[in-house]
Image (cartoon, rainbow, N blue to C red; front, side, top):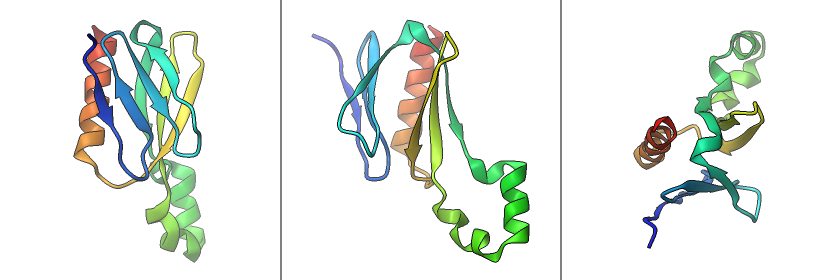
Length: 110
């Protein structure tokens, strides 16, 4: 029987971790996408609020400063063939989310 680790929280994609693969379901989608660990090049968090163009936008427009806290982060899964999938997630700290990403990175590197 396969070990199963599941992460599910409001505002985050659902992630199911198995021995040989993992599955992710986007917040706004009804179906899981399966990824084999051997196919994955990287898993990273992209925070657009830290990009230079977003910083400039915040300086120039008052509304950007008000709504910047609500800007979602992106979880980017990049395959070895350079295809990638982005999943929106809340930009709040969640230790369970960070720990499951760490687990996925460990399994990819092995």
